Amino acid sequence: MFPLAPVCTITPVSPTLTFLIPIYNESATVEEIVSRVQASGLADEIVLVDDGSTDGTDELLRAIQANQPQIKLISHPTNQGKGAAIRSGIAQVTSDLVLIQDADLEYDPREVSRLLEPILEDRADVVYGSRFLGGPRRTTMFWHMVANKMLTLMTNVMYNSILSDMETGYKLFKREWLEQIQIRSDRFDFEPEITAKLLKRRARIFEVPISFNPREYADGKKIGLIDAFAAVWALLKYRLVD
Image (cartoon, rainbow, N blue to C red; front, side):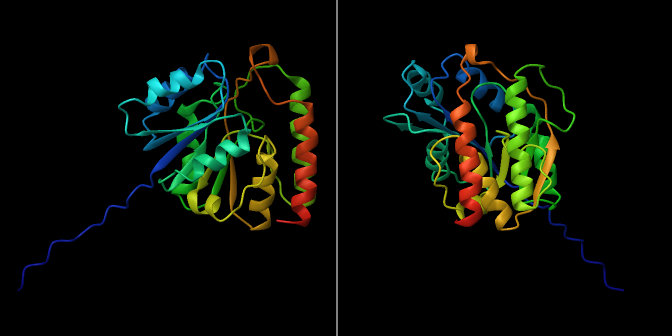
């Protein structure tokens, strides 16, 4: 009898992950958030986009980026908004997956592994970390929560979905989904725009519960009432155009 040939097994290659961090005047938190991202052990690449900071954040970012090839730094000469910063960051991403990570410590990088599961199991193209699915959260900012839920309801009615948190800042994408969508929004209306365009393209969006530690306006929170009206307009506009 001939000896059996050894069985050859192929180990699947894990997708690489970029943390894309848009930053504007976050000198109090930016060092900590980068440290937390690195401590998570999940980042193959970190793209920092300084959106025209004037509080010394730019100097801190240059010091953070020095001698760290894993970290890319992009600087806008003037403030253009979160959507514009994300647009600039996407152009520099080389990983398979992209996570939007705010720099204000409201979202915990230790929970990103939870967002990765549906994609690694091929159940999703995009994963939203929902603040309203039962995860632990700080009890503050009631009217902000009401606005979020109203915008999410509007999204569900207009786009036939059952999202619980359209406005979440924790969104994880397969890179090809970001690359095929032209992002036009410059400010916080990035969130409704990207959601509208993903739903129209029938992307598989999955939600998982996350914890949430919101900061208040006295601590530097930037999104405001005008951004809620901009979100409504974005949902209406992108229902009709692309």
